Length: 318
Image 1 (cartoon, rainbow, N blue to C red):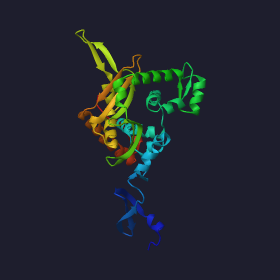
Image 2 (cartoon, one colour):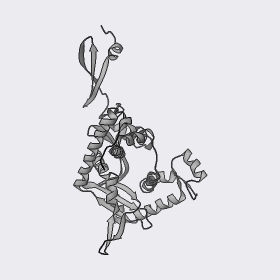
Image 3 (spheres, one colour):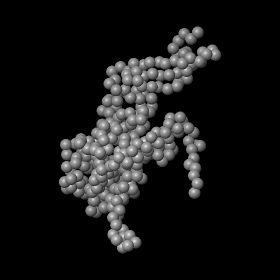
Image 4 (tube, rainbow, N blue to C red):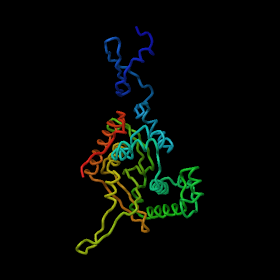
């Protein structure tokens, strides 16, 4: 006869954990002799207004996680592995290997760093002012490399000037400036979506839910075969390429907004700093939903089920 909890637990086979309001039901199978018993252990979650189970199977108070997510170190540290996000969905859409690589070996591209600087110049001026700006001709400079080893928020004076020029262009545009009035900036949120924990940070949250983007070039012009000048909106193709539709779907659900309230404000890095303000349509929103559903299936099949990714291959016919 099993006389201790330790002896019993040693024979358990974990099945699944299910959250039901303030109760966590953990199901096990246990072999005793020739009989298999189904056992449910109920853990009452005390003092949790809204419990949420993160990807590491830890139970948290959702509101406490959201509060902690105000700090960048927590949001981009623990939560980057404990929750899914719009960037994680994009990685999973590419491949499960891409997702694991970003989780295990996080890297920062120059484009992401420039995007951070641009965002900070408009939304978080105190963080912009805390950055280190070096007057060097190239990022291959020894002084620059050494500084980067010490801290991540190192930029060139040229980077600073580009960001400030884009900021001034933004605030000189009355329509763009009015859209963000009476709004909160960099608002974090952690919540369940499609039965998985997600994190997100709204750039601008007020009457509208707005995401601020920078791009190399907002429009391109070319002459068609009839000799007519045609302007091509490159941001539309970027929105599909970088899965902005899935970001729209995730953020609308996290922050309880309709897609009709979601907007992108885009500024290009050209000398004229063109500004674009984009609404999203219902088709765009539901396209994002389909992508999130597919990405979660990838997560379940390859990450959650611990598939041997050495055997992961992409097949096709050319």
